Length: 328
Image (cartoon, rainbow, N blue to C red):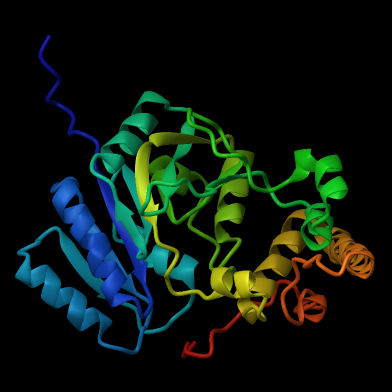
């Protein structure tokens, strides 16, 4: 039987938020242009980079004659959520792919994600396998953060990790289809109905925890997440935020990370849950200190000033963060 042509084929639009990463963004666009769907609109939201990002991106769009791609400059840097929301508001597609600027989309990945959602109407989001350029997998599927997780992270001690393993946030990489509680928004495809149902990303999360929050709201509204590793996306982790590199070096993390963390725990666990999270962290920190005394080679998983920074915004957890580069 021939296909019913009374209804248009589903369409997926792509939204990329750029902040001072024009070179990475061009590589991402090139991967979309050479291996993507020409019917999809690609929206590059520049989060008030203050450099020549928009000019560079527009020049590349013109040079490659890509009428399906356009740059949208934002007047302020209001964060990752706000940048994505600018793009979402301008899209009318059935499916929306949120994509970091430091990614390379493998051929066929977008089609696989869209078909996954078409074949699974009860799923609100689909995520791909994130990997390094050498094809080694990255963690991209997770359990929701709970106050007890702070003890696991700060203690970083085998017996505690083993005892509380079922609460660990990262989920082991699975080669098959899986259904995580939340997934990385470095690359995620969202069904339009989910956005219609629960709204946009929460812009009070400037950066970090906005993906956890969105997945929490989606699951509470009855939308689940499906992870299909047959769709593959390289994540270079060289984007706008220094959090991952600073964590590896155990340097002090940006204030917006801790304020988002505070907001998340307060939003889902209340004031008592936020307090419990911080106290669990300090308990783990003390356990780590004790282990260090017993074993000088032990290196605690603690960033500079973290013992103090976790208390950022404790007395006003709902107060929005304002980036120094923002004019709002």
